[in-house]
Image 1 (cartoon, rainbow, N blue to C red):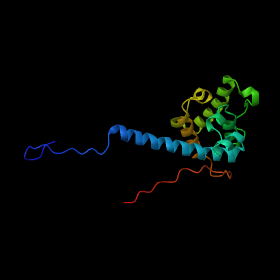
Image 2: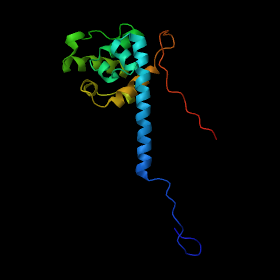
Image 3: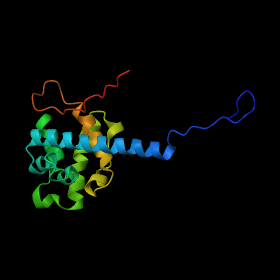
Image 4: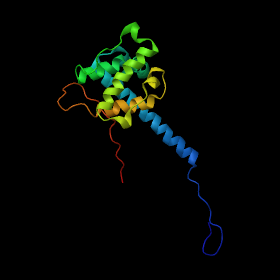
Length: 164
């Protein structure tokens, strides 16, 4: 850029796109970890699941706790009793086919709540991929819990207030 006299103006660099992208990515990763922790606490309080409790205490992975789909089905049935039947449990839920079947029950119920923009592919969770979308789906589900349900509520992240 040039001044009115035609002389080159000094350029000021306040950061590169790569630095900005890295900063945004770091914020998103931090938000994901915080959402995962809050979801683990909520799921543990609703279902009593020990693995979710361990994840809430930072002693385990929420992804591992949810991989068989049992806890997801239990979460739905705790809030909307009897909506999911035929849940594979224990050793029977360890095969990929049974995990995908359990997770599919959960995803189908979420779809019935019109959460289609937040759904995930059941095989992704069963095989340990794309956990970000699973978190997104659970956060959306938490916002659809009926007002009449008197159990524990998901605590969304506090809003960050910026001073002007």
